[in-house]
Image (spheres, rainbow, N blue to C red):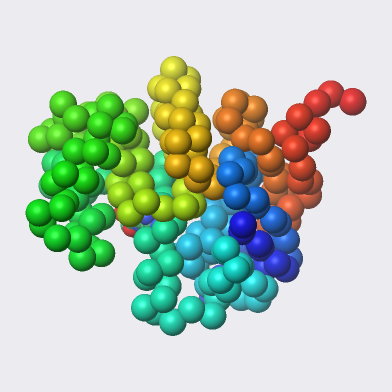
Length: 229
Ligand code: ADP
Ligand code: ADP
């Protein structure tokens, strides 16, 4: 369970991007956060794995207060939080296989175990035949599949998605959402997705929070929030 309690984020330049946000995200949720550009969605999701520090408030993941962890504890905890991005963030000088392997190398996996795990992950995202390709040789959807494989490398219990389908065409978007849904089912992950695309919320999320000007202005079941009055 992810508990976000009265969280504020004020950037060093004084901009108040997240305003007193409280949300509870249950295990197994595919939780969507929707809002216009600049609403504070990306700031909020980056607070969840402490890519950003909250200015005040608490973030508790599975009973662990993310704001009180030592550097070492934070690195341990972050292994269990995978993240995917709008622009994929792959390393262009490394192959598909090497991009996925990197996520294992940096947390100290043995060389002999890495290759097997990489194959397993590439099979999961149906990209085994592209293992030796470079990112520039892949379509957008294939790049996102590599990023998903990388995000899942350490068997996370949480997957964070920052506009993961925003750079993709509708058909590819659908296939990436199907993959995320299947992975959620298979591994019982909790997924938090931020998006400005209503279709994404409707297609895949069970719960949604609507953000506007740094605040959560509505939250609830997707059908409840988006059904016509
Ligand atoms: P969204 O993801 O909904 O587009 P963001 O969280 O990216 O929203 O941004 C919310 C607001 O916070 C924007 O006005 C943005 O300019 C501002 N912001 C984001 N990051 C920083 C930063 N590092 N320093 C100052 N302001 C920032
Ligand atoms: P940017 O601000 O340019 O989007 P970030 O600071 O978000 O970059 O991330 C820097 C790099 O670290 C990226 O290549 C990203 O893929 C990787 N990264 C950060 N957090 C995670 C995570 N939890 N899981 C996987 N990769 C991550």
